[in-house]
Length: 225
Image 1: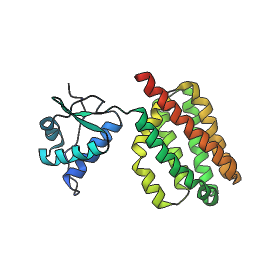
Image 2: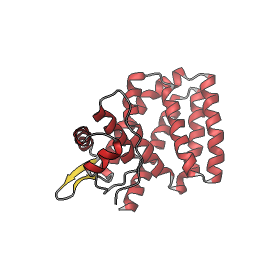
Image 3: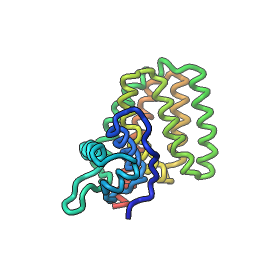
Image 4: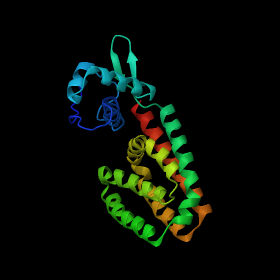
């Protein structure tokens, strides 16, 4: 049975195939269209208010991304994320984030520190309440704000291209509650190191933090398997 994802009619000026690609990519990565679901061209073309030709072009691009696959006698099917997918995406993202750390230490202002601590105060409440649904996007926003302090816009654009994946994977990792409070205390220490301009400690903790996030995500995928 087709999932009950609601798509809005497409009124943007970009090519229709690009809009269809972005809408479907977001729905797949966030889990709105679950792994294993068939994407029936006629049904999805109707729901996206487009013809089947741009939909096919979008599906070909999603296949190149590894998000869908063509299965004999089933058609286009949404792929489940594999351990290899997580390893590759985290490797790319983490390598890029580590490149930004010296610039973060160099460029962070008092206002940046205040903004980060304001986010942490709100996150403190959510950790205490075990409100994972609200905490997960705030955690990603916290990490994104740290990275943006670097001002390295070319790197940031490449990182943004992986952000939806990392948001999904981070949500999987954060649900491993045995790590929840420890990870959140690391968030506080990261800000402390930025404020102290302690690049060596900042780099070591960030490396540990993101590797633990990857490990927890891999555990979640293995448990689902």
